Image (cartoon, rainbow, N blue to C red; front, top):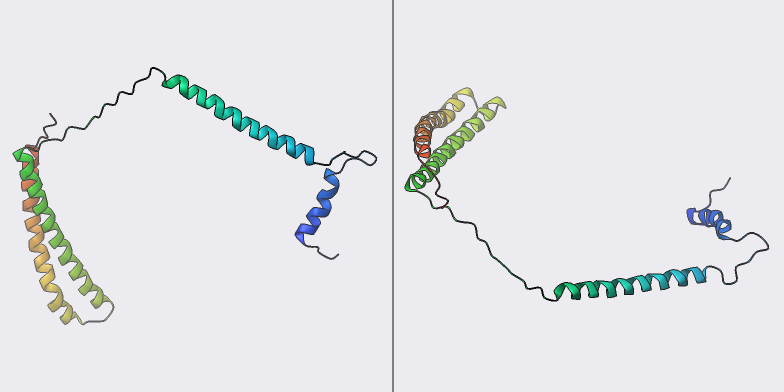
Length: 159
């Protein structure tokens, strides 16, 4: 059985569906239905516009627009909070140094793992980042404790 193109098969199937029974013919085909539908759509749009405009006019009479602009109060920062923020900035700077040293040490260990360097080279290249990272980590513990002490006394004044 030969395969016919999709459009032709669909057309052959759909043609009899829209035809009237034999012996009964429509006087003008489908054209009056399309014209009636288009006229109904245009009338509905026109009627919707008229009704909408009249409703808008009735709402506008006697109505005054009162606009009130509200701005949120900006919290004032107490000296304790300002010190806490500065200490937090210092803490983050130290934490960044810890992270940098850790990244460097991991890179050296990856090179050793993949055989790119010897264990002696890994010791020489990895020891400084290990020592510096340990120092920065201990320093971070101190600045974090200082920050926590300051933040306990920090209160935002929202008045």
